[in-house]
Length: 91
Image (tube, rainbow, N blue to C red):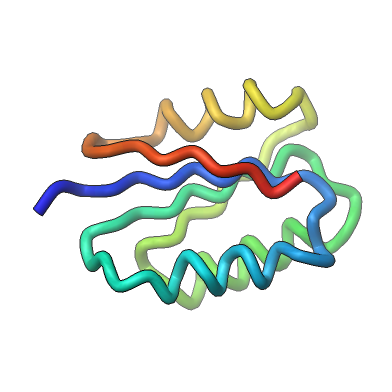
């Protein structure tokens, strides 16, 4: 089964980020990794990312200074080990 890599650029998304992440962690595909890239959020998005990364071994939180959604995606792509890539934004 191929590894599915899911990249979620995050910026000030505290109001709907938990719903997005609950949806991802509850997917039934077993071989997945989720990369949450906090792009310098000023709300509690960073803490939410860390909470999910601490709770689920396949979720990874990456924190960086704000540089836009494309830079956030590229940051995650540098971390991906291989497999099928899915891109979704929570902005």
